[in-house]
Each structure stands twice: as structure tokens, then as C-alpha cells.
Length: 449
Image (cartoon, rainbow, N blue to C red; front, side):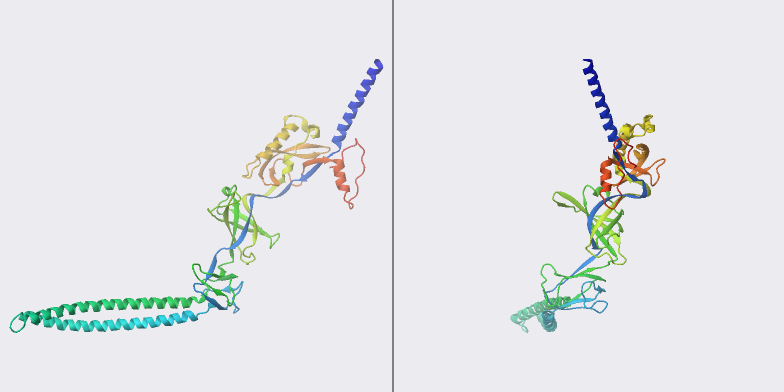
């Protein structure tokens, strides 16, 4: 029984030492992943996609139907085409005007006819007035004599009737003049319309600008009905452009006119352009149950490099801090175990690893984009251990967070995670161009960090 008891004690001791060995081996086979505190700008932003648009676009159409006979010339004497610079009044195109010229000729003839009718009516009115005066004199003489032996009753009545008819004829003559004047006005209106339609056969530029689209060709027939057919699209001023951005309803409340904006286009990789929010349109659109609002971003384009309808990747700046210390967000999320904390840092309530972990968790949820600082903790390598560095965090984005505190300087290493030494060595040795690390036996000191 004593031998059995001694054997059990030996087995238990061996098992205990084995467990301690393996636990110590796990500790020594872990290495820390580190990053450096860096100094730079930190911007909290909302990302969206938009389209570059000219600030003011004029759609030039045709108000009459006909065949396009020819194009005009631009400011350089070349035929009007895509990208042509035009002045206000520049002839852009001409439509066949044969039908409209004949309509003008017909309208002019109608005006002449109406003018002749008016003059004839005026002459007839003068005749009727003269007859009315003669009838009036006859009636006055008959009225003075009255029915008597010198003037029979029949003649008396005839003079009265003749005078009344003459007055009626004068009124009819005046009405004929009014009618003739109306016919003349109608003919003149028809002539004006015919001349206006004839003028519409010449398409002129209403503004000074650049043609960004030509939608017709010579020989093509345009038909103007309820909607005027579009012939040219003219950008009034390409030195100022807009970016129309579709913004999700969840983010629209954080945008306001005048807000700073940066955007990039694929046509100029690596180059950033700046602008500001000009207007937030109220007419929202819904696509697959997602509500978006169109935000107009205005920007300068003095050299005309930004072409219309380029796709822009837009960032609305919600907050910005320049030249601040920042660390990866992973450094604020990582928490060590109690065994990984240096013995000096374990003493006292401020050095407890659990407390540091709670502060790190608080920093992850407390760091905000409005710049209000909260408590947090970073961990820096200290030989085979780590020690805490308590900081205040400010702005944060998806990658980096602003930090400040005593002893925090640019270039200081902070722990962002950990991994097994064998895995780290395998990652390094997998590159045939790098030297292989020395082989360390289990239980030895941890590899250098």
C-alpha cells in the first residue's frame, strides 16, 4: 500500500510539473504584434458616390420641323461639334426653310389684302356719311314744310325714312371698318408667326459656353410636336462644376450647406479635389427600400480637367483634427492577460490588468467623432511583458484613433495583438529571400519583439 501511495504521488507530481511546463511554454511561445504611434491628420467622414455635372446646362432644341441642312461655325471658325466653344448668338445649325419662306410670302399677301379691304371700307364709310348728310338736309326741309299743299304726306314720310336709312348705313360702314381692321391685325399676326417660324430655322446659341453634346447630324429630320427635340447641350461655365451625390437617409442628418467635401475620380488616380455642400434636395428617391437624397456639391474647375459625368468618390468631412497623434483602433481593443503584464504594473489599483482591460473596452465605445476625449489604455512592450499607458482618445474613424497623454510620443510602439511564435516564425521563414531565425528550444526565453 505504501508503494502504491508513493507511486500515485510521483505520478501526480509528474503530471503537475508537465502542466506547469506546458503553460510556461505557451507563455513563452507568444509574441506581440506591434504598431507605432504616428502623427498625422484624422478626418471623420461619410463616403458616397456621385457624378460630376456642369453647374448650368442649356438644352437647345428646335421649335420647327425640318431637315438639318448645315452646322454653323464656332469661335475658332471650325464646324460646330463636341467641345466647341460658342458665343451667345452663334449659329449652331440651319433647318430647311423652304416651307416657312412660302408661308411668309402668303402671310404678306394676306396683310396686303387686309390693308386694301380696310381702305375700301374707309372710302365706303365716307360715301355713306355724305349720303347721310344729304338725307339729313332733305329731312330738315321736309320737317320745316310739314305735310301741306307744297309737300305731300308721302314725300314727307319718304324723307324721314331716307334719313334714318342713311344713319344706319353710316353705322354699318363704321362696323365694316372695325372688321377690316380686325382682318388686318389677324393677317399681321399670321405674318409675324410665319416670320418667327422662319427665324426658328436658324438655331442660335442662347448663351456663351461649351457644347458637351451634339444630338443631330446633317440630313437628319427633326420633328417638333408637343416636346421640342433636343439638338445641342451647352455647358454655360465649365470652370465651376457640381457633383450630384446620393446619400443614405441615415447619414443625411449630419450634412449641411457649406460643409467641406473631398472627392476623387478614376480619371486622375491619387489626386484629391475639394468642394463644399451647396444644396440638399428634398425630393428623395427609393431603390429597393433604400431612401436616398441627392446632395449637390459645388467645386472649382479652373483648368477644366474635371469632365462632365465622371464618377466621383465623395467624402463628406464631419470632423477634422490636423497634426495629432493617432494609433490603430486594434491597439485600443487589445487586452493582455494578467501573466503578460509586467510585475511592476500589477501592483496597485492603477496597474491591474483587469482595470486596464475595462478602460480599453470603454475607449472603444467612448471614442467618438465629435472630438470629446474619453479614458483609454494602450499597452507597450516591456521585455517579455507589456505595461499600460493611460491616454485620452478623441476623434476616431474606421482605422485610426486620436490619442494624447503623458509619455505618448510619435514612434512609440503599442501592442495591437499577439500570435504564436511558431506561426510568426513560419510567416517570416516562408519568404525565401529572408534569413531564417535561429531554432529555439521549448522553455527558453521568448523571441525578441
